Amino acid sequence: QVQLVECGGGLVQAGDSLTLSCAVFGRTVSNYIMAWFRQAPGKERGFVGAVSRSGDMKYYSDSVKGRFTISRDTVKNTVYLQIYSLKSEDTAVYYCAAGYLTGAREGSDYVYWGRGTQVTVSA
Image 1 (cartoon, rainbow, N blue to C red):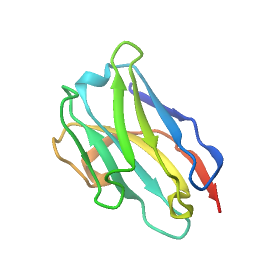
Image 2 (image 1 turned 60 degrees about the vertical axis):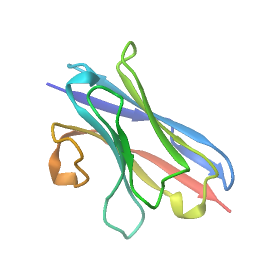
Image 3 (image 1 turned 90 degrees about the vertical axis):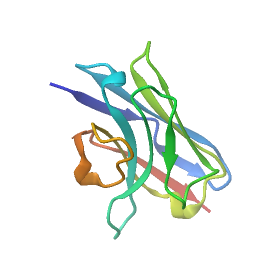
């Protein structure tokens, strides 16, 4: 059984930076495409970015490219999402997901999900 646990969310100010973590239990991160999604109030969940099994390929939604960075630590079995220059529109619940399809951007392509961590950006 694979379990994903996100943490690092909270109330931050616009312009701040924040790092979210996703700890993986049960299997190693190298077995999966690891992704981040987010769901803003009143909106559907959307793809943020992902990292390949090898860790050498990362891809992002156009809406976050340049401000969001995904990384991972295979020793800690954890994936990170660094967010720079936070904006009010970044307010959302951020979810970590694991799957098997390289290049996948749809939620339905991912098998395992965390419960999410709330990020609230104040103006």
